[in-house]
Image (cartoon, rainbow, N blue to C red; front, side, top):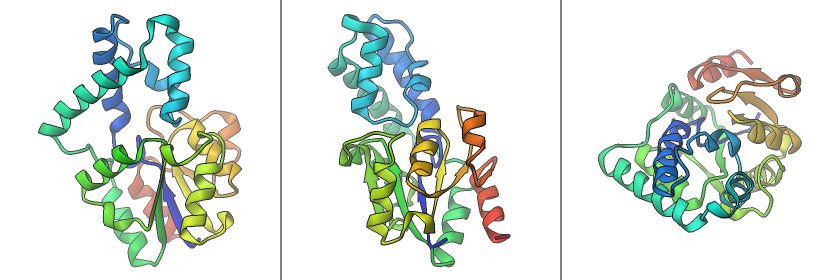
Length: 215
């Protein structure tokens, strides 16, 4: 392996649970009731793809501008008081990978603005050689485009790269790109289809480091 590509939400940062709170807040503001459960329906997809899922769920009751207005309102209040919640083992793994000469990238369905905000908040932006975001691709995960672009930006073949993911859409995206895939579960538990192609499953990012040390 020459490179490692990280998903962001639910993998590096505990932001999926934060999104549940944000969408509960936004849903109530919009008169839809608590809508945090929509996070489970939209795991790993771009904003554009997420909007389509919201339309399917709520029809004419859904207003895209209102959703993102209230989501930003919740997030702005949270980040004014807190740093992004970091998942166990992130710093240990990043240090190990850098010390051992791996090229590193982020492949996140979140917008570039959101990705850079979180990476800066956690103090890890400088670790990454490339960042590919949801607003930089045409086709959302589970299509392989975002991972293919990440490998291209790093100058490696997909077969030479490892993807770290937590969601079904993200895992399928990386696998379809031709990469080795390690799952670090967050909100979603792997089904048999996904388990069949995983290189490994680790409880946290520190376990990923231990696994790689043994290879």
